[in-house]
Structures are given as structure tokens and as C-alpha cells.
Image (spheres, helix red, strand yellow):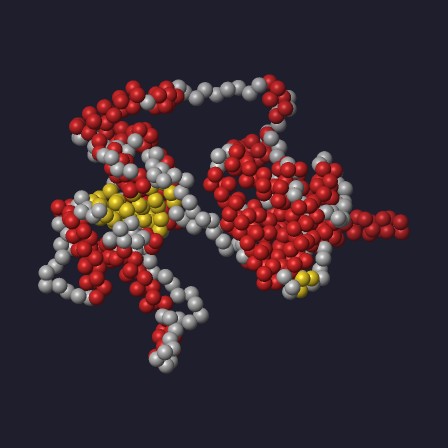
Length: 553
């Protein structure tokens, strides 16, 4: 149910936007009064962090007054800019949330596996493609360890192994201590008669139905289906139901794509590259379905997804000039002017859509929906600085400010000593900011005496009632004492006599960690062998020319 006063202020906002879009000047100017600040506010935040912290404190305050988390909806001007900061700060303030952002399936092991499979066949076994296939955790994953994969990757790049013939044939033996292990891994995964070799060796065009049958056999022989089932069961056992749902969605999509492929291409003859390309096209642009794990959560989404009467409390943040309204660039082959020219010369019943007009209409509709999104309180927030870049205020926000009395606009600052009890979110957030506030009070020792007493009381309450804070203070009082290395460790790291040089001292001075890595642990930098014409010339000179000259002398 919407209160009468609430409906009145949102009608004012709607009328203001309509008048501005229609370029109408009214004889009776619309004014949003200070008495309406309980239902509508405009925030001007110092920066993005202060904006999100102010929002978190506002939510915690309303929760303490009896509101529910599900009654809050957060709309973002740019979801990508806010995603990481929102998650960190909301977790600090212990606010459960659901971030309704699109997440692509392209990073799932099965889709990465299909991309690697296609790349191996298309590019004739490039080493990176082969390694990526093995790293997908699907192809015989239960039989190989991460260390074996790392040794295999190092060996392949070190010896510049490339091409189907090189991977199918036994590797040339080297002095590598792990050579037998690497060779066994190659034979099992990539050698002749391996599941991968059997599947990719056929270069003839066969029917789509035959390719699906061959692919199903490859999935079974390579234990890919078993590994996918194991990933799902592991997620369920660890109570990670969201990840389990992702595995389930990808598998359902994969089966759907294969079914549709059979419906269209069952009797069409094609080569294996075409088969893999078609299957991959149906997978790589798909998105996961977003389902909140809990009902009582704060919903966070892009402001363009807003609708009228969305929730009780709606906070739209990040509404800078760049994001509000959002201007979409025409990236099609025809420019807006060319589209308009075509429409002028076309008959009445023929026209081509003008994207600038469509985008303008959509932006106007979104703004009007936003002005009517809340049933009790609407907040529009503008950060001065986002990602260390200063942005101008949105013309729509400026329009609303021009028609509002002073108290409608509220400045949001970072946590500071001027704040009172209503600005405190929760104990964890206070502990995170207490040091900054204490420094601010000490720097202004003669000022803000009431605030000093208030924050001193908060500090005593935290010390008394919060065991984690007590433990933190005790740890801060204890100096970090260095511990001597054991004699056995020193004997392994250093010889009895340590010989230094000027270059060694310079290296130590420039970077102590690099000196420790290279001179103490003696770790070697990856050596990339480049057989150029100079190396080849030296080889033939030593191998053939020198013995030839000696024999004639």
C-alpha cells in the first residue's frame, strides 16, 4: 500500500521529467519541499566508497527499526564499477544480498574443454591449446595430479613441442628427472589410440548423427562425463549449491545443444571442425540463471531493469552524467543520419529503425520508471569520484536539485568523528573504522568534545563485549619478534663460507626478495631456447667444420 504523501512526491518527480523532456515551462514551478525528505532524497557522495558505506549504514539503521532486508532494492548506474566494492562493504556490514548480474558460462570447465578441443583440431595441436585441454579438470582428471600437469607444461614449452605428429609420437628422451612420468602422461592422454587421438584423427566428412555418436564415445572413454558428475557431487557435499546449480545448468544446456544439432544436422555431412564449431557456437555465449539462495536478501541490479513500484525502499547509486541516462553508441553499419535519410526516401509503409530515437525513448521510460520505483522512500545518489576519476552531475539529477529545497540534498562523507549513533552499522564495521576515527579525534583534540566522549564510550563497549576486538588489541600490543633459522635450514641454504661480490650487494640493495630467490633458494628462470641462425652456425662449425680442418692439417 502506498502512502498518500509518498504518491504525491513521486507524481512531482514524474511531472518534472515530463516537462523537461517536452521543453515545457510551467507558470507554477514544481518544488520538492524539505518536509518530503523522508520519502525522497538526493545524495552527493564524496567518492564511491563513501556512497556504498552510507548506503550500508542506512540499511542497518532501518533494519534496527524493524525493516526486512527483502524490502530494499539497490539500483546501480554501472554494475561492473560497483560489483567488487559492493560485495566487500556489504559483507563487512553483514548485509545479505543478491547481485543480479549476468554471468557467462564461458569459464565453465566443460565449455573451456570444448574451446580447447576445437582449437587443437583447427591449429594442429598448438602447445597452449593442448595444455589448456589438460588443465580443464575433465580429461582423465582423477588419474593425474596438478604437479604432473605443471611438469608436462614446462617440458612442452622448454622443448618447443608442437604439431599432432610430435604429440602422438614418443618424446625424445632428455635429462629431465620427470621424463618417464611426462612420457606416460603423453601416451595416456595424447598418444596413438588415446581417446583424443581416436576422435580427432578422422578428417573425412560424415553425417551429423555419426559425429554425435563418436563424440559420445569420446566423452565416455575420456571419462569426461564421470569427471563432470564428480564436480557436481563435490559441490553438493560442500554445500556449495550455487556451484552445483551451475554445473547442472551447463550440462542441461550441452544436452539441449546436441539435441538441437541432431534435429537440424542429423543427415548433413560435415567435417569434425564444422561439428565442433556449431556445438561451440551454442555454448559460449550462454548465461547462468540467477536464483537467490535466500528470500530475505537485499536485491542489487542494473538500474535499467527497474520497474514501477519495485520495492519499499529503492536506492539508485552511481547516477553520474556518464551513466544516467545511459547513452548507447550505434555500432551498426548504418549511422543514425543514414537511417533517417533512408526513411525519408522510403514509402509510407516501409522504414528502418532509428536507434537514436529508440534509445532516447527507452532512456525516458527508464527514468520515469525509476521515479516511481519506491513505495516508501526513493534515494538518488551521485558520487563525485568513481575509480579515481571525477565525473559531472547528471542533467536529470541537476534538474531535481534545482526544483528541491536544501534539505532534500544530503552530503555523504566517509566514516568520521562527526557521526553519531544513527551512523553506526554494526560492530565489525566500527572495528574497521575505529582507528581512523580515533586519529581524527586526536588531531582535533580541542574540538568536538561531545564526539570524543561518544566514540570513547563506543571504544570501551567494544573492548568489553567483543572478544575478537580484545584479541586484536592484545596482538597489537605485542611486538613481532624475529625467529632464528634452525641449524639444519642454514646448512641447506648456505655453504660454510659465503663469498660476496659487488654485483651481489647491488642486487641485494635493489631487491632483497629477488636476491633471496636467485642467490639463496637458487631458483632458475624459465629458459626459452631459441634456435636462431647464429646457434645453428656455431653447431655446424663445431660439429663438422672444425674436425674437417683438423683432419686436413
